[in-house]
Every structure is written in C-alpha cells, then in structure tokens.
Image 1: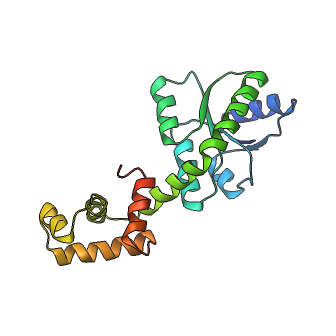
Image 2: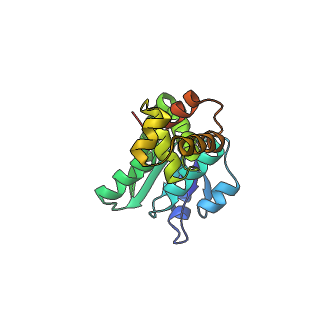
Length: 194
C-alpha cells in the first residue's frame, strides 16, 4: 500500500501502526513524492487535504497508471467524502481507524478495483484528452456527438461551417483521434456526453 500523507506526522503514525500487521506500507511525504516514485501496484491510502486526491487522480489520467485510492481524514465532512469519491477515490475512511478496519476497507477496495478499475482508467484518460480542447472545440465535439452536421453546429454556435471544420480538425488532432467516431467514443468515456 502506498501511503501519501502530510507533514504533520499523521502518515508516519499510520505507517508505524499498519506496518506491524500483514500490510506492506510504503509511506510518502506528499503526493509529489508519490508521483516521483510511482508504485507498480497496490492501493493508495491518501490523506485528504482537499488537493492530494485530485492531484493524484489527474496524474493517473495523464500517465495511464491507475491505482485504487482510499481517502482518509480526521472527522471528514460528508461534502469532503463525496467530493473525494466524485474525484475518483474508490473508498474513504475516517481517522482514527484500526488495522482491522483498514484491512476490511482494503479488501473491499480491491474487489471494487477489479470490477471498475479499467473503466476508471479509460474515463481518466479520456478526460485528459478532452481537457486539451478549447471551449469552442468542446462545443463542436458536443455537437458532433449529438449527430449535428457542420452547418447545424455552425448555426447553433453562430460560426460558419468552415470554422466548424477547422475546430473539428483541431479537436481530432489534440485528442489524438483518427476519426470522428473515435472522438465521440472518447467524449462518451469522459462522460462529456451520454
């Protein structure tokens, strides 16, 4: 298990507490150190400071190396837990917790990771590709995914069909898509369109 903590010593006390059991723990001072020494496998137990989980999941989307993330914090608010899960954490646990409690959460997280880990990775990769687009290119992508012609997209956006073609070509290049159908698939995986 990778353990990304913070400078207040919480990660160190967690590491010491968990290392005595059957859990192999590799502590990291922060998400930057974890990204620099990315583990080949396992789970990530990440102290939720409001940024770390999002930073790690963004890195996973860009690198294509997904690992399940379990967030933790002292007395987290419901909003904080929900945000971490929406960002892509597979589970969340409130500190303090026992070795038995985290072991149970880890077992459940591994089972969840097997069932939707590749889907999460595809979504993260697709989002990173869509994030490369300008606002206008995203609007053109949404129109294309909605089945609109260049003329109809142009009318909707108050631009010429030729300008739509230019945005469409730029969109395909930035997304690394060879065909419009591939761009639509990426948009669907990124949850940009239904």
